[in-house]
Image (tube, rainbow, N blue to C red; front, side):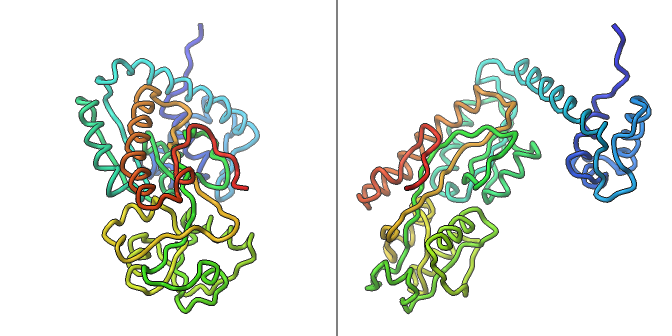
Length: 327
């Protein structure tokens, strides 16, 4: 059998440049110098005897030959990663590395307990846990910077990622405790209190704005926040009202005595919080993480919220399969 002259490092660099169209970006992602990345690409093209990129354009696109080669390299590298994971996967207690990214909604109640349980179950594991907005978590997963991400499902499918739905989180109104305004009046814009928006750069903010457009509701855009804590604080202080979810409400318990949740008037809608993994992943470890998360979500988020607000029963709930669209 003829031995391949191709270097694994060349192929990894080729994938990075093909995805980004930039030698500089690929160098930063790989932790290499720009000259080293350029050298690897040059050697690869020399060995293959064919140009893989149009080097005259920026960003640098792959040639037709490069596109065909990329499809085969992606498949081959996926098989190699799968073989590596299978070889390294033994008993759960032998897991070596685990990197998690969770949405901020789980930061106070669920994330610390999850870490404690996993550190007990994975005694020899190098463990890293990050807290990020959902859109950042999906980027980390696509860049293979984390093993498992817990995030809000975006509007569009995520190629290359496997999804395990966890939580149905309905949208509700958060209003000051003593607010006498009817829920319908908040949406009509006749309330004296301003609407406090989530940033539209976040998935949750974009979902809220999309629903308001569908309902033909137009509200002044005076206040917009990336921080859930800031929104809950302002509602508790009587400075405004918000469209939020029980999971967002649950993480800031110190404000619960100063605000209340009410059902979203008219046609309701919800978001789905899911676990996302790369297509090639350690299924044994991910199954353990997901099972632990489901238990913690039920006991630390759903049960307390439903006990306080019984009308959430059946709406704020665990998911075992992809949810149907809200009717």
